[in-house]
Length: 234
Image (tube, rainbow, N blue to C red; front, top):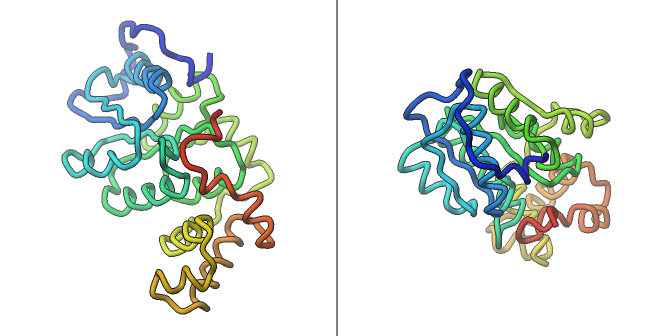
């Protein structure tokens, strides 16, 4: 049974509890069934029977974090009407403002390029929804114990890719967002109040980090970054 289909009733928590009473967890998942399955995994196997907050969009996370920073944040890269670029921005925001919160990305997107970006971003754990439920359990347990955890499938997909690259900067993410919305480099520079050469440099740096050699590759193979909603899961 995969993570996306683990929605059975919650049984008694495991005697080997990892979560502590009073600690909070935020789960961002737009599919209610998958969100319920993840809540059950956290309760049954990780000791987080209470204090788990479920949200369906990235935009809800900062408000909750300002109210009460979570010990653990588990998130998909985007919700409805949101893009992967929004998810990457949120990861950078959380790492900057709430560095003590451990972040795990549980995603259906298995493009090695984005997985490589995520391993470079500073998150503590990475697991795919297509994997067995035990993969998320192991990831949470290892992260709570203070270790980084990339699932078996993630490691397989990254076999021929370095995990020591650099994350996209905030400016690079902004440039990509403008470009994928149909803006030219010149228009993006005007809207960002930056020199065209500076924006061109941001674009080239982003393409290099993503492994794209040309504009054609960027727009054809990188279109997953700008798609709205978790379309890669359907």
